[in-house]
View 1 (tube, one colour):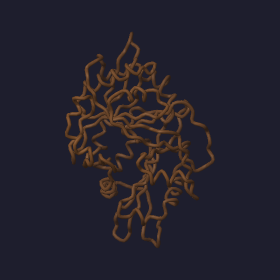
View 2 (cartoon, rainbow, N blue to C red):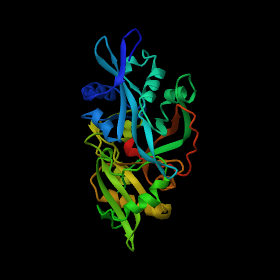
View 3 (tube, rainbow, N blue to C red):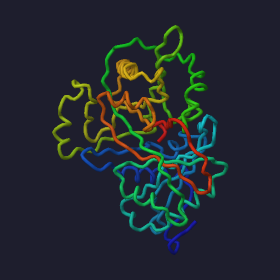
View 4 (cartoon, one colour):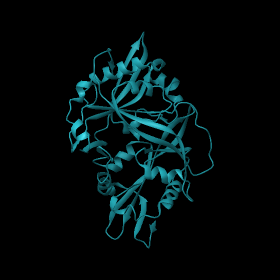
Length: 344
């Protein structure tokens, strides 16, 4: 599909687009005192596919120079909504190369193109970083031919370490986890039904038990083969703080600039009765059994386990969670929301 006097082409990506998409990701970074790049190397197209049952990722190319200048779309997977398995689409957002951000004027048509090519999807949702004020302002105002972004609430991503051998944890004995999927995780809306999804990466299961029953568990997911966080630079006070021995104080050690972070994502975190102390002791004990320098876990504002992470020594950042609607589907999403940070 061509736009602006055939200057630009909008289409779904293929494997030949890896290099162009990679260049767009590498052109971005987080603003502020800590600048981090989120990457999907070495093959972004395969990385998107791994996150769901189906991916509908669009690219925009500049026909005058055959350059990929934007990428975005939806990753579709089965997730629980109000206790029922539904086909859901997570919108990845539209990343535009900085050289073209003021030149693309057909964003609404791109969203329409995406929606027309997705079938039988019951719910769409997305997250936008709190600091991305321009996107928040744009999308919260309903525009003609654009989907409706309905704010659901705040999502916090916690980065932590604090390793300490407090509890004796089992590794890779998932007996009883399928029962937890039925009785616990199925009640958390936007929780992926398939906990073995390729997008989680190489996952190790950790748990503690009492009389055979799992009382706390999680997967520790190493995604570094297809997702990376690259520490770019520090500015302001962080230039000084980054040299301090923060790990000795229980906080994550600041990564070296221009290097990928050795991280893992905590997924399907369960703690019986949402016990805050048990949660903290369990996560610190799991950290002590691994060699990652940073752990990531994300929780929606109504997830009781956020209270436990709030008590730990963490570095965290916030996002706004939206339901995205093209039609009149107003089915209410009830209960706790369980979006997994590993698949955002």
